[in-house]
Each structure stands twice: as C-alpha cells, then as structure tokens.
Image 1 (cartoon, rainbow, N blue to C red):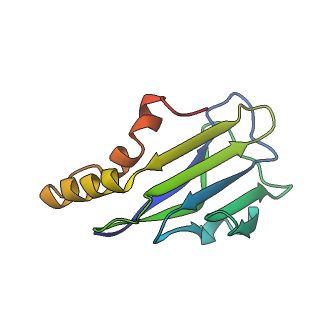
Image 2: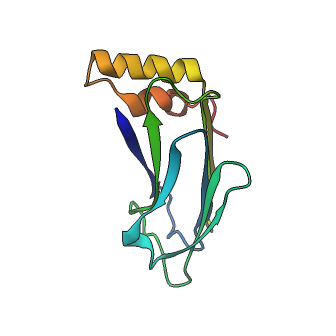
Length: 145
C-alpha cells in the first residue's frame, strides 16, 4: 500500500482569534515519519526530537493568528501500512494549544495485529477507510483527553 499521509489540521472552531499557537506531533513505530508542511514554514518555528520515536514541536511566530473557522496544516504524518507490520504497531500522540482556546490532545496506539487487519481490509476493498480505522476511537471520542 505504501504511505498514508495524515495531515495534522489545526482548525479554529472557537469564538476568538487563535494566538500563540503551539503543540507537537509524535509518532513511534517502524517506517512512520512526520513531514513539515513547506507552505507553513514561514508561520511556525519547528523543533525535532528522536528520543522516543519522532517528535516535531511547532510554535506559531508572533505575527501569525488563526481566525475563527480558519485552518492551517503545520505537519503531516506519513504512516506506512504494509505486511508484515512493525513488531510493536504504531503510536501517535499530538497536543495543540493556543491563547483563549481549549487544549486538544490525542493519543492513539494501533497494535501490529490491528495494522495487519487494516492492511487486509484495504487490499480486499480499495475504498476501505484506512485513516478512519486507525483513528476510530478519536472519532468516537473514547480516548481523547
């Protein structure tokens, strides 16, 4: 199947302009990476760490503001879906915060067995929603903090 790009979209659904936006995305697992969006490099300062998987932090520059109902995509996760899957599955964590808004966190772990089931489902039906299967708990609100 190759890589599944999953954009980390920051959407301001609040009632105030988003200022001082900051956060991180962290991934763990074989053949999984985080890509900085080249279109937003002027809006954010980025930092990276590889102590526990791959982690990219981002902080909006002083003059960047996210208006009500506006969106920006600072990073994209590149998730490898193949068989055999990585031994321990994958782990995805992210946190986003800004002034006058609620902090949003997500933590997702997908086992090797579940990754292989997702792969098999996609091979059987190319219309299978791979991202929906990986992030199903996030959509249901079961694991978000």
